[in-house]
Image 1 (cartoon, rainbow, N blue to C red):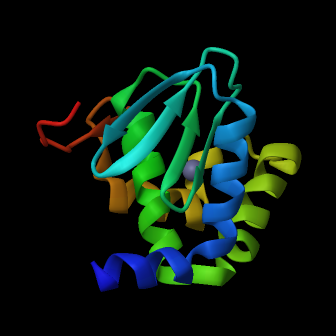
Image 2: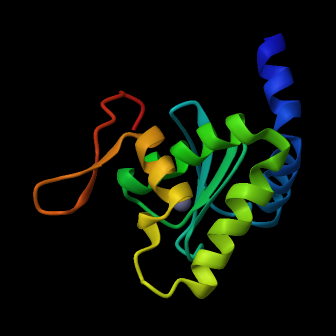
Length: 133
Ligand SMILES: [Zn+2]
């Protein structure tokens, strides 16, 4: 329990931002997946992982697992997560010239931590076999 509290505080900037966004978009579907709280809405254009909170517009497990991978990064980087991962992702969304969002460091790492692999056809697929889908 103490470890959980300390981890929450370690990730406080993104946890507070996640809580704020959850409050702003509260008329959506909420569920727990891999121990994290997800909020899904068709009106959410992409996905964002903020500490313990994930907002997504996706119904796909690959996206949820990728976002779970970002929660692992959040634990690693703590208060620097929004600067290292957040700013990188934002610039990728707005300025990505090569068009392959998942090829750069933070996204590849999130895929790896979330259990996403590339299959023989070049598709990103989930390898997570937990029962909490
Ligand atoms: Zn990502």
